[in-house]
Amino acid sequence: MKRIGILNGPNMNWLGKREPEIYGAVTLPDLEARLKKFAATNGMEALCFQCNSEGELIDKIYAWAQEGICGIVVNPGGLTHTSVSLRDCIAGCGIPTIEVHISNIHKREEFRHRSLLAGVCAGQICGLGIRGYELALLWHASA
Image 1 (tube, rainbow, N blue to C red):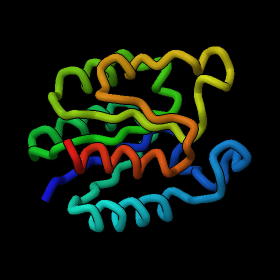
Image 2 (image 1 turned 90 degrees about the horizontal axis):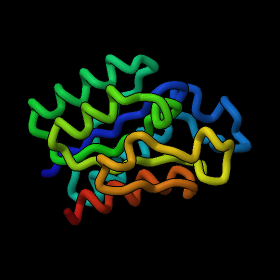
Image 3 (image 1 turned 90 degrees about the vertical axis):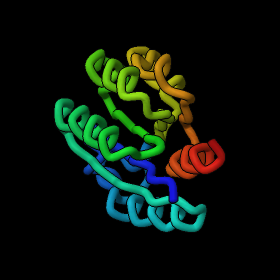
Image 4 (image 1 turned 30 degrees about the horizontal axis):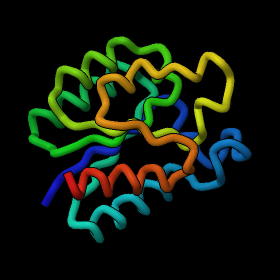
């Protein structure tokens, strides 16, 4: 069974509370439960982790690499636009990664249009709400 890490970055713990007009009403625990069920239905195990600390996110990716997980789905939040360290971690860990954003970052403020991670990820899904996570999991299921 493929094990896929689902990594949510800063502020994602406030999903469902923070700017619901942009991010929707689904909470992070609800999203994680939904993704675990979706993954299981598609022959995978989803391992979920959220943290507001850049260093802990990087540590988790390297721990997953040592555990031999098959893929990562990452919503890096604001670190998308600022974290060279997270980019380098994804580039160096050797785990196929899909970058996901609930909102369409290209239709938002100018500073959100550039992702430092996109160039080292297998793909990017944005603007499709929480379904973007499911599409990323489907990609991993077929990879």
